[in-house]
Image (cartoon, rainbow, N blue to C red):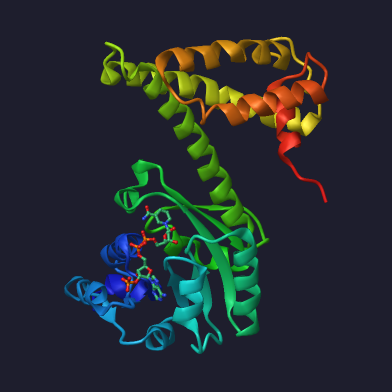
Length: 295
Ligand code: NDP
């Protein structure tokens, strides 16, 4: 053991899929003593030459360190892997993607078993792990004390962003951002479909599309947030009435290009509902409240 490893917090990691393996390598490279366990032992054994201690069981791995990181497929696999394992006195950090409700239940479950709990939502893909410039990070929520205690070790693979004591908030932030991503992918897919059968090079089209999305999304989300905070949705720049009036042009263009409007129709329908519900001069930001099911 080098002087470097003596000073670093020992870490146990359960789960060596694509993400777990990427995380593991960064802790090993940073000199943290690392104990690993994986349901299929081969993935754990592959890390032994890099310095990982391989545990035969999840219980043995958990017993090896106070800080226990879990990065498994889903909440059910966490339940299975930790079934009957003694968590007394452990600091459990669950990076498995779950719903906010599952995260809150898992926090209570861990606390009943004598562990402190922190939930995480990973905003990175494996190639971004260990490369700070790649911009990845993990949302953390749950015990702030626990987060502060382990902040340095947790920041080894990717940056950290703490979002609150509510254990469900990391998952909620994670899913909210990814949901926005899917909406963006939907729009980009529709755009590429519109040009697909024409003599337009998609490679030349891509930067136009990317720049446009960036120009719209950045100021767009800031404006939405300000309007939601103030409750003032009146605007003269790009009001809802103007946008709804434009939708037949979009639908006719899709029809003319032989493209299914299935990805854009739901938003157009929401705008139409919004126009019915609100005054004509309102911004599309007022649509957010139409999506929320009250009660
Ligand atoms: P993988 O599919 O590569 O690995 C899944 C891991 O879960 C493996 O270690 C697998 O073990 C284990 N596992 C599955 N079912 C069980 C079970 N019933 N009992 C015990 N272990 C089980 O997934 P990733 O590593 O990519 O993802 C892990 C988590 O990270 C997920 O929650 C994912 O949403 C999240 N994440 C992943 C990202 C990515 O791009 N990869 C990005 C952001 C978040 P075995 O090897 O035996 O199958």
